[in-house]
Length: 106
Ligand SMILES: [Zn+2]
Image (cartoon, rainbow, N blue to C red; front, side, top):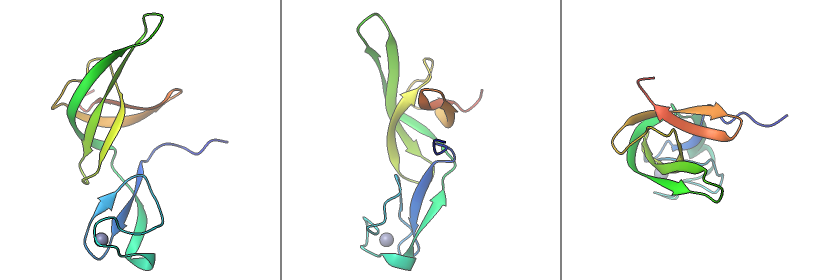
């Protein structure tokens, strides 16, 4: 059975407060702390779109992609719903195609 994509998960550094995603176990990319100082934790999956573009694929399909600044701090590149534009508040949803960020007011 595939691992659920939600909640999004990240790492939180107890030493400096840095939050990053995806989860990795090498240590904090900000201060170098590792081991028990860096904990895996769920993220809200909510954030603000910094920029978005529509990609035209062969066959006429279009895909909306963009950069989302998650409220905990990390930035992710992600699939966006067709109506999402820069500065929208969004939240992650799980679809058959993977993670999709939709406008937060839906
Ligand atoms: Zn740190």
